[in-house]
Image (tube, rainbow, N blue to C red; front, side):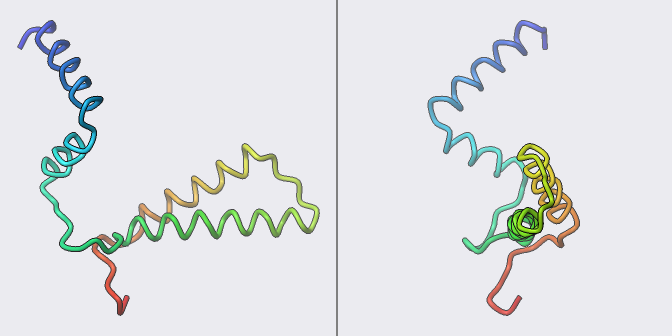
Length: 98
């Protein structure tokens, strides 16, 4: 495949995503080969969200005790904690008994 063909294919894909983002997401999910059997949250997503929320609460409590953390650093800490928690969480779908 020539460079020009690759570029044109990329432009066409970008235009397709812009016109129909839901179909683009569905095709990416299909390419991954995984489909979720339910609408329940995946463990990794829940772990990441919960960890980020806890990090924000800890930073807020620290601020009440006089610990000054710049907003940029606080958001970076929350994102880092979120990503680390999601990375180490087990794969799978959460059920009511989890």
